[in-house]
Image (tube, rainbow, N blue to C red):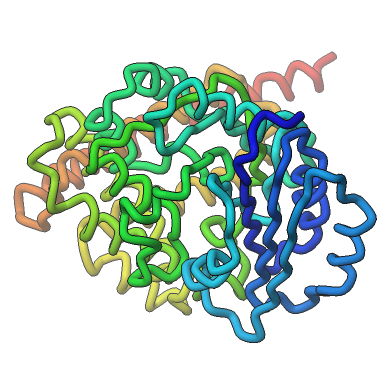
Length: 396
């Protein structure tokens, strides 16, 4: 379907996710829009086969593909430098970027983007819905943006968007189409980051008053994985650098402008930093690298926050081991046990402010003592009930 002569360039970035690359490329080749340019840039994957990919494109392309380029980096340079290198070949009036493990939802995605741009010529970027899916595509995990977020998209207010995007990633770049002048507006991709290429662009656009247009339908599907969720030993260093990129992003693009953020959004932002980002960094990059029980105990008591995080973590680990063995537990007892322990963990966290003062320690110990008493009575009741059942069975 040829709406216009505007060329749309689609850039695919790949690194060690080659199992899904052909599927991603095919979703682009099957678009009903014309003309399209395709650029695939691989960042030194172990088994990237440039010739095989070229053959795949030649076998599956249609007349709408007017140009394609395959780039194979000899050394790994990181996402930002990889995309900068790829953009030296971009010729389009519009562009879309995608990871190799993401793909366009159907054959009309590019057409819908261009129709939206034609309808709203003042928009420089347009977002659509994104579906997070499991790696085997059998489970739909989440639709983004959420219903709450959609209300902000419908308002088309750049400041409200910034308040939202400043504290969390709302969408992935595979569900967004941009006009080519976007990079001129934001000053290009920021090389002070290693892996985060899109989030700084979003925040700079919003700070300059450019709210995104919105298509209320799914345009892309994203497999949950990648660097940000790579929990293998090999991905540990990259994950650490990715999280460091996030801290750098907040220091550079968010913190200098917090005075413009409403109190409610500021509270959510600080919660994100403390409870999600700091906690993730601690377990992924500090606790996971700590070897030996003595070192872990030392780390646990090095600060009140570490103490609470590790205490809660150890509880959930214990629950996974023990909970599955207690098959005959009364469901009500199980729920109650969960509730009591969770409430006490929350109490500990709120009290502590555990600044390890005498008052703080007294409150903490008092809360723990309460928990132990509750657990004693609860477990006594559960196991006495189980004993009665066994007696009845024996008697019968």
